[in-house]
Image (tube, rainbow, N blue to C red; front, side, top):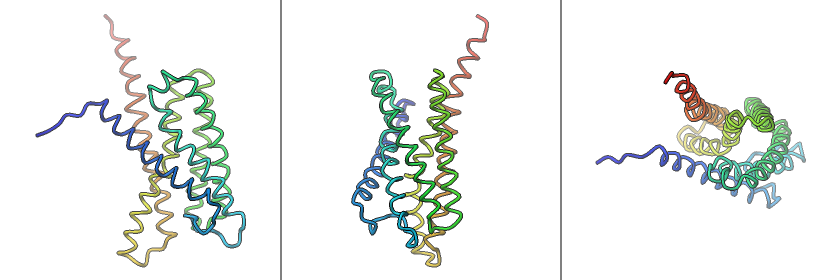
Length: 225
């Protein structure tokens, strides 16, 4: 027996999966770093840099807020029924991301996980800020579709934090089979992998959920009646 799942149902399932995983990771990270206890840090600390832990906290807390807010900004009902709330949450999202990205650049500089991981997080922070800038610029110009496209890309980069933790879990399982794997190797591979996966998925949604419908509408309008 087969069950047909409508496009709307698939979208709801996908949104729910993203929202639940994002909220879970955000709350877990926030609770961990709100303690102010360096021994609970999920990231190896640089013993030579006392500020390393502070930069991680300064990144993790606003980044957790970004993860929490993001899914609800893509909820159509919220945008249409509560546009003022959508705008307020958007402003909080923008400010939180700016602080999180700036702190991420500092934290990456102090990282002890190797140059590969550092480069990955440098690029991620820069891409984070660039996509945010593009999304903000387009909404200020009233170009809603372009704003949506760039914010899809932006939140996909934010969601890399969730995917990263999944890859780290896979890496931990792999280490039990291949003991020679180092944490730095696992972390670096997971960082690059999470970024690439989220970028590819974002472009899939941009093309299939945003660009393609617009193209079809334009083609239909061009057909002579």
